Image (cartoon, rainbow, N blue to C red):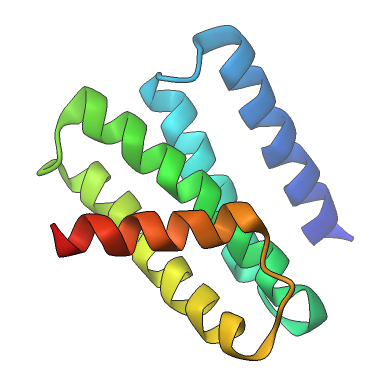
Length: 118
């Protein structure tokens, strides 16, 4: 339905932004953030950890770009960081009951926890 079409459109938009603008452009970060929000909205049912892992990866990407370009105190950087923390929190909940988390998602969760400790 419309949800799947929105997902395909956002995935295509991110691919185009990466090709045309590069991986470190603010519009690429914004599109990654928006796609992550769409993934978070789909994070239910049997594929919950899959959608959360994908959202976490994109939010981490958006956060890194925004931090690099705008600095860590900018509101857009803080929004990406807040979204990532929410996704990571949900991933940790899933990890207690599911073994389906990707290795990449686990590394992201550990890296962010390690960064907070330092």
